[in-house]
Image (tube, rainbow, N blue to C red):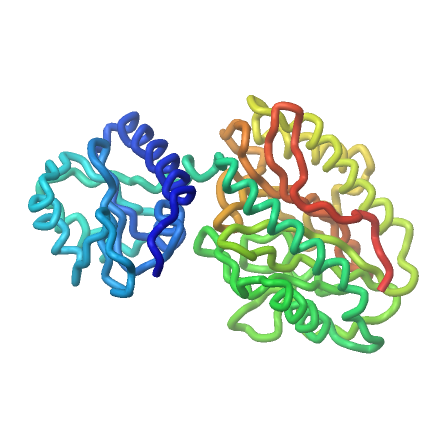
Length: 393
C-alpha cells in the first residue's frame, strides 16, 4: 500500500480536525474508531484495526491486518486492542479520562472489551459524533459523489438495451449488474443500520412492488429467497407493468442513489399522475432545501402535495407505507438524516441526501423518481442527472 499523497493527507486532516472539535464540545478526550465505514472515513483506506483520535495530539492508526502498509509515522502495528494503552504511553500520549466508542455499530462484547482496554476512562457513545461529522461533506467528497452520479447515469442510459421480451426481473437485474461492473462499480453497497441487507440494488416490476419488506427501504419486493426478502422475485416482465430500477452507484468508496422507471407497453393514467406527482415533490423540495430548513419540512411538503393530488393511498407504498421519503448518503446508504416527519435535523450546507417520493399502483407497479442532492445556499442541487420521465422498454 503506497504512502498517502499530499492532497489525500490534507483531506484526512480536515476531517480529523472537525472530529476533534466535536469531541471537545461533547466532553470526550479521545475516540477509538473501529467500524469499517468510519475507518475509511478517517483514513481514506481500509484495514482491520482502530483509529485513535485524541483531542490533543496526532491520530494513531493501530493496524492488525494487513501488515503490507508502507510505514508511516502515525501507523502502529498491534496484535490486539489490549496492546493500545502501552503503545500510547510509549509514544508519550496522556491516557484519556473519557473515550468515545462506537456503541451503535459494535456488539455488546466488543464494547465491553474496549472498555476494559481503558479501565480508568469513562466510555461514552461516540457514534453520533461521527455520523454528524459525516453528514456534512467536504468539496473532495462531493466531487467523488458527482463522479459516481455520472457513472450511474451512464449505466441507466443502457437499461433499455438490457431488456428482452419475456425475461424476468431477475434476468434484467443481472444484465444491469453486468453493465455496472463494466462501468467501474465496486460491486458492493455499504449500508447504515441493522435492517439494510441488499445486493447491488433493486429492480422491482409489477405487483412485486406491493410486497411488504422487513427492511428500512421505501420499496419492498419479495426477493428470490427467504434469506434476502427484498427486490426482484422472478416476475416475468409483461405489458402493463412498470419496472423500477434502483441500482448501485458505488464507484469510488462513495455512493449516489438514483431511481428511474420504465414501462412495458401501456400503463394507466393513474401511474403517470403519481409519477408526475413525485417529480413535483422533488421540484418543491429542491427550491426550499436550503441551509437552515428543517429536514421534517421536506417530508411535510411531500405529503401535502400527495394529499392535494388525492393519491396518498399509494404514497410510499400501498399495502405497507414507508414513513420517510429520503435519507443521507455518502460512504453508506441510509445515513442520517432520515427525511421524515419526526426528524429533528436541520439542513446544513454541503449535506448530501437522497430524496425518493415513490408510489405503488396495484396491478401496475412502482413509479417515482429518486435523486441524490447536495444542499447549497440556493437549494438542493442534483448529483444524479438523468431524464426523469417514464421511459419505454
